[in-house]
Image 1 (tube, rainbow, N blue to C red):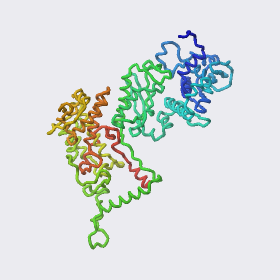
Image 2 (cartoon, rainbow, N blue to C red):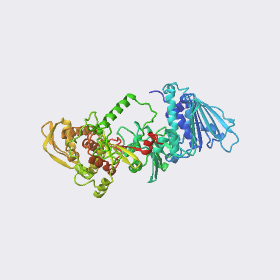
Image 3 (cartoon, rainbow, N blue to C red):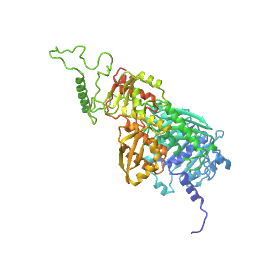
Image 4 (tube, rainbow, N blue to C red):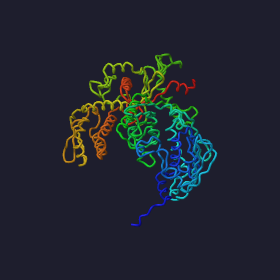
Length: 636
């Protein structure tokens, strides 16, 4: 080992800069937060060449006294921390005891500031940790910090910066986070001499969100609020249809500070469980306010990660607030017709026009021989005078000519005659414990009077202000899943013994999994036993899956058990298995339904929670208003 020596101040500052100043966005963050802590009501940010050439942050805050300007750029100097106890209850965005000194050690820094009661301001320059003399300058109250030639004396750090466009994007995202955290503050952002954002002060949170993400998203946001156990939660959540491919659209703020917290991100996804696909992330803006002593922000050099005194309470409160909001909202996505001026595929239009003409011909009875060429009132097609859609017993739905051939006969599975019988077919003689028989019968009576099946896949029905288009498989899957979930909560699923047990070849690992999860199989209504050294037999199977291959379901179940064997949550596994079972039991795309079955399925839509999405998160229903229809037909 070499001789131990004291490091020079310049090297110490560069090491500290490595912790605080990672890239230009890090500098912008430190300087904006200083401005906010100074009580500024307007903050202006300018960058050039991604912040490598210039970063300038100006504010109208309280300013720094002329006698303190020289001290402000020195190491371990701050106005935000008085004693050791304050470290554990930081009420500002940070004490920044090294920020300006660290930035000055790797750049050419110029700080000018003036307090509101001073006649003149003061200026100090720092070039690579060398602090120049303070000089008097004229300027309005507030502080301006200019950082030029970042990392000019640390070529290794400068070399690993990304392209200018990438660094600019990082600064923009950082600016977005801070502006969202403080809607009452006016913000400006200028890039290479051009203003990209000019946000007025005294905006509401929704207005600030609209400034960045557009009014369309802001209009769809659902507000939620909750205050319990000393924790105030307020936020805005987007409908599941707005879910994104990454979690970058989840903005979490604690006492005005943007943070990154996996626990809370998981809570948000958990609240949306069953409302969006598994690989999607919700869009949400969550603002938490609590006693600074209840959260430690000093666990990360840039203070974007925190440690909670009672993380379980924070997680459960966020989860509950979001879940209650989602359950109370109508999450049916609105179907927006394309613009009449949009470019279309003329060949595809020709094909559709031809198919429509051929379909309509099939609806018009042939003219009797000897006809004068004018059909009488009794032979004008499939749409009688009784209504716009006519009597469903005479309207022939369009039959798909794709992968599911048209068929005038229903499938061999038991077909219900009304909503009650459909319910009994799947769930036995009694409806869900949460739905009383009179309520169910009332829903049947209030079922829409007119509905059609299109392509043996979609159901179309009218509402008071428009129409609904329903994916029959997705909706039926949600109905079955909710019933399974309620039943398995109270005990095991109903099962039936197989007349002839089905056998399945398994590996030794799969045999061990079946033995380990025997109780889980019983909860799912399955009875499985060894049938030789490498074979198992299924003796009992869930009644709901009576028309499904027990061998196939068991094979899929074993795959899920193997995935979960690494230590996943058992209840999460149960939900995945119920989703799989519901998917297999539901009517499929391409299955023709009778009018009674259509009415029954639509009636059940109002009886289950989260009916807007299937258990996998896909939408079950789209809505279109009369106003949108009138707009497309140019009635408005």
